[in-house]
Image (cartoon, rainbow over all chains, first blue to last red; front, top):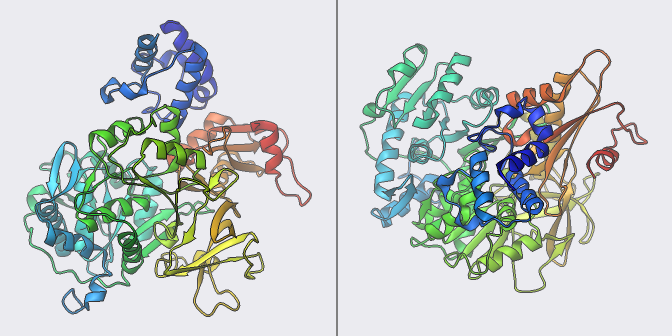
Length: 85
Length: 535
């Protein structure tokens, strides 16, 4: 697992949503926020993360996420998964 | 003039703002509100809301019985709710996250001439003022200088922080039969319905809570609901009538709710069940992780028994209570408490329990005949918590508030909920009409259809709510039949929905299909749609 694989997974997973919102995948940069942008609600975001946990066979420790981590951004997701590896 | 001094003690007790006033008299220096790392005592909150109240009294027309509040969860927003009530008016909450067109409809329909605006929503206010030309009085209690924002709006009058100097307690001259707050819920024709809740309705609910639960000035209350959602009235006023402290989450994000409960020693929790489902999915409901909780209330959507049990494990000292009630019956009108064993449930969904003792219910069939225990039908309610009707809307009032043969002259509110009563407990089975719940929000599917139809030009449109998991978390899906004369695309429809509907009403996906399946009666067969596209 690496940053590219994480991004690929997300883009593949959100293909339809991105199309709906007219967002080009090049716009998904590190500080793109999946929840703030309105693309996903919090529940859909958690579901996506749960799917990623399964896909990459990793368990995220949500307990210790700090509010400053901004983990709903691509950067935040990267950190979360790479830290847990 | 009727005022607080001429009303009897019983009537004074039936005025919402007096619940705050009486806690203020007992605990002036006790914390009432914690928001953005600041703690405000009852007397500090009182003084600030008096400033707002006196400005409203001096400037808003006395025949105008309501004033609006626009803001996120800030100190000014809560003070504005109290300030409007202290000015003997009803408050109309506006949400800066709602589409502009909807908010403007709410301003027009309620007929307010004054809006209290919290500092963070000033850009949204500008958008409102650019779109309408209603001559409004705008109170900005947290803003020192707004010249760059307001100079171009000549038809409005603005009052800034420096204009709000009078912190004396105003004389309250509300009556129990005056409206306390006005909320809007989804309606079928694109027009939101205005639910007018009276002071006596809401104080009946508050009495029921204070009689049944042991709450005090030492309790710390959560505040998870938006002000446009009537469950926020419970958050604020159950707290303030107890003399407790309302603790506002630092970030309005459900991801940090577990930390929020623990860090702030929350003792009374209230949320939609979805929030518990989400915390469970994030494995945050570990055994005994919330030792400070003594009551956990859930309301707004079906509560799955497994979610309730998960929550109970995490909050082992807490009573877990499932509340049920449409906004028209004021916050909640029935309850069921989770026990150690043998909890009443149906299809995995926890019972909504028993209707509160002072309220009445019956279950009817489609001919308005009263059914016996064990027969499923539509739940009807009446009593001191049930409103008289929709605001300025006889058509919807007549549809939903009816007489039932053999049940006297007094009107019953038809909930539209399909309910069965067994062994004394009520069970929610679903909706009878096009209204569904998504994360606790009421959504009329026809309102979505209406927007999709207008955008697509297609006559055949259907929306459904469907939960793909087994956790009861509903999502919205729309189906449009390709029309011959107009090419339509999903992004086009979604963007039109985003313009006109609140975020929770935007479909997860729009399917553009060749043919709409119809049933024997020629109606769109939603089951077939779900089976073909969603399962």
